[in-house]
Image (cartoon, rainbow, N blue to C red; front, side, top):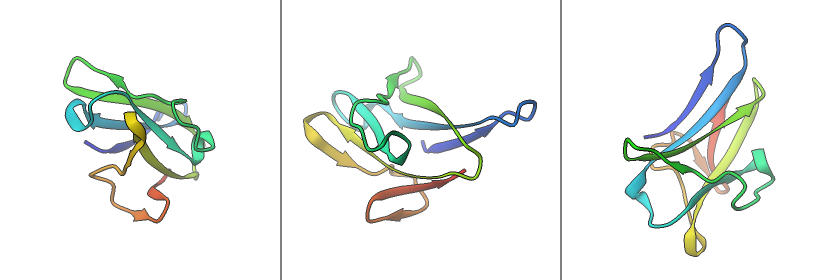
Length: 94
């Protein structure tokens, strides 16, 4: 699982999909970062029938996103598959 950058070739619109295995954390998980002013709960990952949870966000091409996940009980964690990490979390360059 990982963060996926998706670009529609017809419209050139770009999306970022945050995707985790459902069993990575008991309870709800939110994607929190520069795209939502670090607001907990604003972008909650939705459980899927295939054993994952995810959320997809519209982003601007060329944007750099820093993010972490926030699970229930105030547990912060980084994406286990993100290629680039720094002190504030994972980095995604769109």
